[in-house]
Length: 124
Image: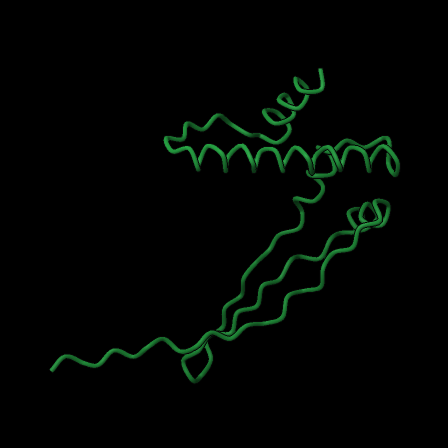
């Protein structure tokens, strides 16, 4: 029964669709990623059972879709680019859920500066 429930979870809640790979390493990678997703889903379900029994893994994952990751790129005067990856701040409801589940969001990543693109020589 647990194996059947795992496949049901993979197909429904995790939205894993059949993919027809032609090469064995890709098949193995697909199965591995699906298995990791199931493990994370099962871990979340157990955590919810202890800390928020009225919630489901699906409702928690849907609540977290409010957080978006964006990349802001700003050109500098010397030809380089400043890239700042930022996630949106959670709203009050999601902040309460994060505290209830005893989670902690990571800090915002530091900005990165990419080197100037190589200048090609003009044709002769």
